[in-house]
Image (cartoon, rainbow, N blue to C red; front, side):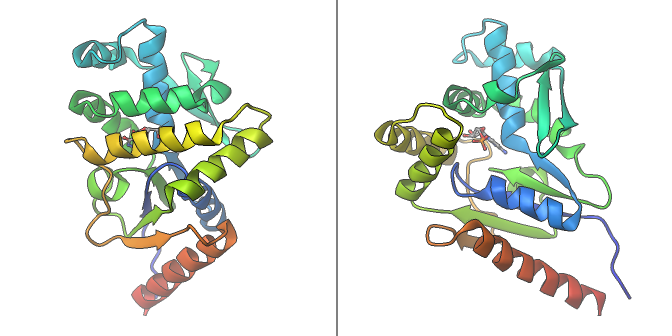
Length: 230
Ligand code: C5P
């Protein structure tokens, strides 16, 4: 009997580990919905910045998010993020937005406010969710949990190549330092720290290209799903 229950694939890991690209590929192959939860944190940080809030002030940030107005529209390839009906796709990809997101992501009140936004993405036939706490907090019942990692060196190089291909300026030493700083903040915060769920499958993508990571993960998914259908 075929198992048609909608289900979730949670993919967590630090920035540059390749989880975003993996999530896009899996969602495409399975025809599933896609949640880029980092984009939600980035949009929230932009909102607080637009409101002129000092990001170090937790209660002010939380208050500014009370009327958060965000949505995603399906674009040609990727979904387009809107903040107050303005397309902010370019702005949210800036290093400064990622940095600001990781500052406000430390606050329990912020994480609580953004939880419902994230859970709404789970609709039939299923969801691929990418972030830091998808398997641990947001979707603890996910059928699949993967944790992607890669060395800081490799992650900085990937980010460098990505920025250069987008014709943006990039400095590899600065990127390495920024990534290490962001890792420390994400791993050491008290609320929803970046850690693998106990049952997560750890995939080190340092020496693998995207296609190899996708093949590895897909073969596991297919095998588990086939066994469930027996
Ligand atoms: O994944 P991305 O780099 O877009 O995320 C930006 C920041 O948002 C991360 O460094 C992290 O601090 C925060 N974040 C989070 N939990 C998530 C997704 C992102 O804390 N689920």
